[in-house]
Image (cartoon, rainbow, N blue to C red; front, side, top):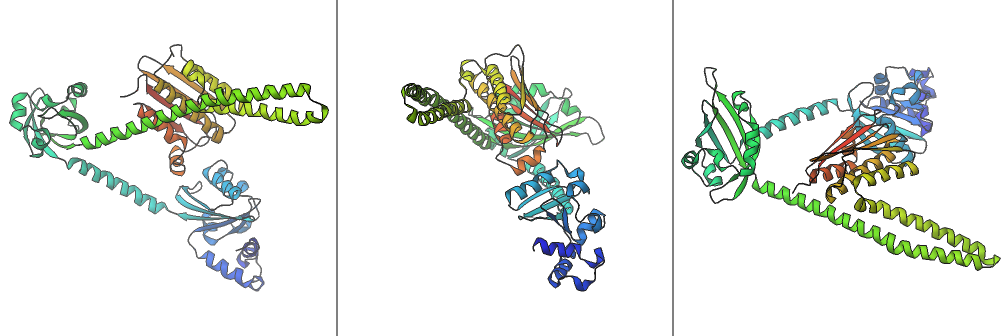
Length: 486
């Protein structure tokens, strides 16, 4: 359909403008009739973002007559769309001249929509499909899946029952045969040795002690992961779910029923994957450091020597050669600056020489000097040198967050805060930019820097939290241990 035929359908429809049906082109009339029978929103906007066409369903959803919309700007009629995900995708589709699709809650109706965009040089065609029922079905499915996961959690390698004593002590009454298959012990051997807690790994006994027995008296279900030592001394990871059961007469808790799974293989695979990821990051940083030094020490020095030679040639050359030598000297000077920037982007030497705080302060100053973003750095007096892995991870998290600010937040102030104590270091990057929906960003751009920041924090045993809303700025907070997890 061309823009001309769309205008024919919209401006000459007899129901809208009062023109006789006979004046409408036959093809446009038939097409209008077809589009009016489609139960989806179909809208066409011209290059000036003015409404060129709306089908019957779109007009019903808009709640406005066609003459109140046709020829008027989308942003004039619906100013609440400005700055939303809809404006972003509309403009991006027209700029890139490529079809796209996204899902979002409608600004006007609050219902979920699936939106398809079909751009051309003259028109942007928007097809909006109501998927509210599908979203609700998906939510019910997720709830059902969560229920099934809980059932799966209780379907285990072995089940057990403990009798609860007056002091909330637990005596193993019985266990299915899988208990002996996993631990090597019988129920009688465990009770003779002082109870099942006797075979808990020494490093995990403190975890159980901190949890206490209050959950038993409260009748609260617990799900936990601990290590147990088998009869041969082999540590095994066990994931168990335990549910206190009260006396049938409504009295105190008299038993604890539970189920356990041997998750040793899963834990070992998880540890191997984390080790591979940690090793990959180490190799990447090693290569970055090596390339940065090569650029600075080797190529940088050679370019500097070339620059000096060209300057010397300029002083002794004739007028006929001066213009060409001046151009070569300017090119060499530009290359020197580019090599220096590449070296700093790969890995600034001050991160290794001076530590995290000076490197972050320099990074903020550099960002302010080179971009419209005004970056400010705040640091606690207790901040000092950290483990190299922690310093590298913290620097990369801040670097990635500031890169996202420049790319997506627009010109705005941003503050980087560094706080450090004996056990942890906290980094916070807060900007006053346009903000975004973190969940949608992870779905739309799975390769974005958010996943990289999460991975770096997790591999060190830390956490990363992103708080943002469209129009409300963004705050990224990373908490890392001062010593990386082994």
